[in-house]
Image 1 (cartoon, rainbow, N blue to C red):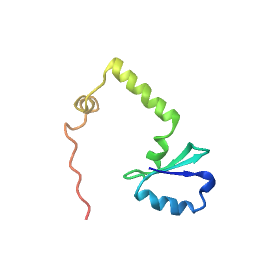
Image 2 (image 1 turned 60 degrees about the vertical axis):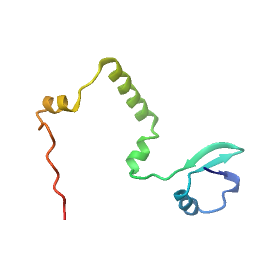
Image 3 (image 1 turned 120 degrees about the vertical axis):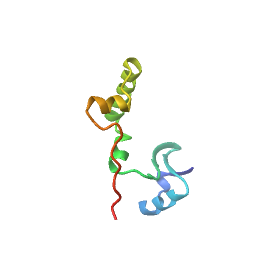
Image 4 (image 1 turned 90 degrees about the horizontal axis):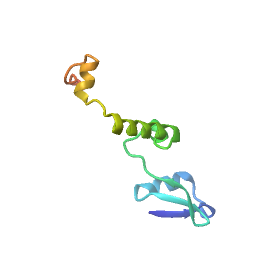
Length: 95
């Protein structure tokens, strides 16, 4: 992993993002990490935003704790509850 002190960051952001193909870049200030530039493969803006949102992460954690305490439904039970087919219909490929 490459580190870069913010005081020495003289290149454009575009230049640094091109180097992400090889390794993430951790930006530091006085030796302490303050940010990271990492490639986002197979993700969109919503995924990137939610994955760092404290409110969303707290919601997910509460759901995990509740699931551990109370259990949950498997996919078959969910389909039965909502009157869905036992297996989803196959999607047709667009040409």
